[in-house]
Each structure stands twice: as C-alpha cells, then as structure tokens.
Length: 76
Image (cartoon, rainbow, N blue to C red; front, top):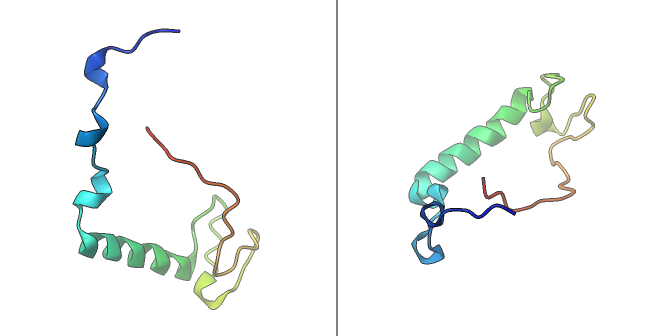
C-alpha cells in the first residue's frame, strides 16, 4: 500500500467544512433554491418537469418527499 506524504494531511483540529463558513443565510438560500427546483423537477436524467411540490410524480415515482435508502460521509 503506498504511503501518503504528510503534507496531504490536515490535522482534524484545524478542519472546518467549507459549508459551515458560508453562513446560515446562504445555507437557507441554497435550501430554498433546492426546494423550488422541485416545482419543475429536473433532478434525474429523465427531466420530466413534473411539479413534485404538489406531490405529483412521473417516471421516478418519488413525489414530494424522496426516501433516502443510504448515506455516507464523502471525504473527496
């Protein structure tokens, strides 16, 4: 297994996720923008344009609320 040079490691005490530095107002704005995108949904490759805010669904059969089947931390 190859070794990783020390300059690529950031001490955990000095790490802060970039989104936390954006401020609450910016995070609220982005969340509102994401919800508004559901009005003419283009979230999946099918680009059906259905209004998921009215709990309508098309090919994806998702409706207003998606069900999360799994999640993980992304370190990249």
